[in-house]
Length: 357
Image (cartoon, rainbow, N blue to C red; front, top):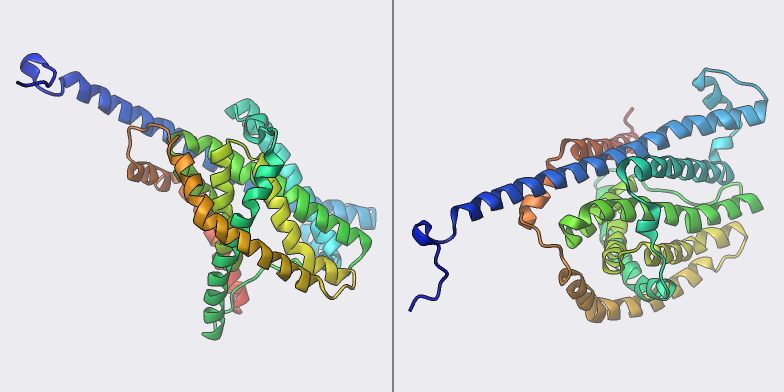
């Protein structure tokens, strides 16, 4: 006896099923494209704000030190460089703090009223978020270290082959109490909060309705590329992937802000201790990282699989399969423009590091 439902002369499935499926696919594709455009637009705006605010900060610094104004930016830059102001940690960290803070404020002021992306919807602090952040920190640091080791081998191989690989330098020059404090404030507090807001909150808010794991991967990819150099980009991708998984797991960036602050604080110990004349900072940082690695390996082999199961069990039901969703993301013109801008920065830094223009 045939137990299949009867659809009359039309057979199985009915014609309206295919029609509705095609409509659903077209609707989901359109909605995902819109969100990717919004995401790319916000990322491009954020970088545009950063570029503009560099000029604003330099002009403000020039006015502060000279008491005068000139429309000629070359004059401003020459003055600051000749007086070696741009080489000091206090100056550069204050610049970074000003630029990213104002950029984030401008970005949120656009995202909230225009795109209905609320900061409160992304942060969502809850009881126990500090505990959760501390609990998952060893896993993120372990991923960061392991992939950082791979990045180190790659950069060493490139350097040995005669290709200079640009590196970021956060060492404190011309140390002063102000320089030390402002670096701590920027690197260990304000920077992590803003980066979590932009590179976890906004990205995952816009993409997670179309795949929580997919949004976590894209968040980690964009976060890694943002760092501007190979060694930092690869290690930041590893740590950022765990940040993103925790964000989608708890539907909040509150625990990842805690994780990010702890990570950056530990990483800053050598530079800060050197600046204050304490020569054991590197040993302390290394000891902390070794202890964290033990906890991180435990989390990797015991807790990570549970974390992934919790995330995948609550994946949104999408009509498009994962490959189609990734294709939509990576063929979006605005996002490709953003990637071109970021990768262009890598190319320019490589050219400069290897004696180019």
